[in-house]
Length: 115
Image (cartoon, rainbow, N blue to C red; front, side, top):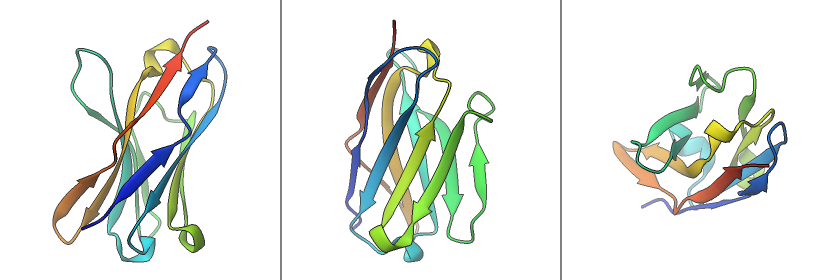
């Protein structure tokens, strides 16, 4: 069982930045893939970015060049740095861990981009 706790969401103006954090209960070095997903009202949950324990990263086309996913092994934390935010980035953002064939999810953190 992996516990995930997200933080860092909030209200930001278009063009602004936020950094989301996800702290894991398991050593991040043992988790195969960690990622961020988001779900906007009335839409399905979608992948935002993933990172593997070998350092490979993957991004949705809609966030490439604006978002950066990273890991801090000493803190068992995954970050999502979000720059140049747009209103269409508004959603609940969820941290995900894929560990021993199971998917684990955090409780989600709301990101609202609005003037």
